[in-house]
Length: 614
Image (cartoon, rainbow, N blue to C red):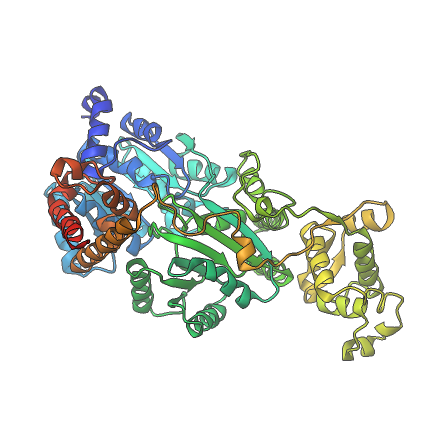
């Protein structure tokens, strides 16, 4: 069968792409991965979110025949992908713990009868001896492992159950395995190749740039108000707000609801039924904001997420990249913004220090945190710094806050020396707040108790606002000129680089913090959903009508609206106004099954809207 596929491969894979999925051409990187799988090779594909990773195994699944097993870590993701495939006329099933035993048995019967081409399962169910034995009796043609970074203990979302997937190679020696992920630095890629493929796999890295995302970082000043200012640019849009703790999730949700926003909370402390209902609302209802911990989001396939906000810094650049990857999956402009401050750095260092990880892993996690801090304090073009972490280079992007509003570095050496002198005089025993109290000459019980009002540095910095000292200390910690001692309750400590500033004449350059207004911050970018072609008012009205039709169909079928058609397809319809089946087949994302099932409904809607228009 594989030889037959190879002989007719170019025509077959393109026919499948057009007839089953409604696309006329592959995206960059997809075809190389597909060709490798069709040749029977093991593959690791690292592709940015929104680049079409799923098609890299779905097209081969249909070309090879037999059954493709897809390993997925999340039940909600399985359901959405199965629903989308079935609506495209591709027979797919999932077996998981959220379904009744009867439904799972019926799904397996369809698989055993050969009526299913793709079967989605969680890793722990797949690797049971009973399931392995059952699959060996079936014509297995491909195994696809989605979110493959979960296997890496060096990665940002390690899942212990993924480790057992390394047994698949020996259990099915003649079946190609494809591992796919959007986020894997070199260390993570090496571990995936070793654990899943025993070191033998072709690795494709398609690049990490997401040019449609606008990147921004702001120092925390008034976080909730900063969030509200940001959201003023995204009225009626769907987005995700990440918080570090469950308590902060609920507080932020309550704040947004009080401000009139349609906001939901999601965290691991909620009942699983409530979490599922919350996720389904987010996927189905336009304009919903979900406030969540990192428990939410892996594999979320909602294309029209227009923004992602981090109220606290994530664990690493990899984690950050994965989380912002949930924005703009439809390829249209989206905006991501992170707030961070000294307390974030302290908390992240505490998490690493208090973990049970071996020292080697702690050292790596510290280096990853330092890379994230370098991104937060980047002197120019934030995208350059982000991509450099993944060993990619880029000219200034023009799509980040530092390109929009260049902020030159200033000489902060005198401020740094004042801070370091104060830390030294207080014997490296106190945290940020106390050091700033000393510098600004603030009278407190602690200063009185320790006699710090008698020090030379007391009040030496009172001419400058506290925010300036907070900014200087934050950037000194990020740059390694100070460290935070978690064993001594977050006290500031001197480092080798401290000595270089104090004694060797090394300069400390810093960037002044800036809190811009909502109007000024948007002057150089488009934050609303950009269209492939401008719509006139009549077409905008037609697009709104088509969205109502789509929502009705989605509710009838119990699927998210984008599974019926993505916004891009509706936009295409609003411009082309197809009135024949041939014309409708030319709409983006219309394959044969959707042409059969939906063409007449949407053509009638277009006709009705045109008739109703004056």
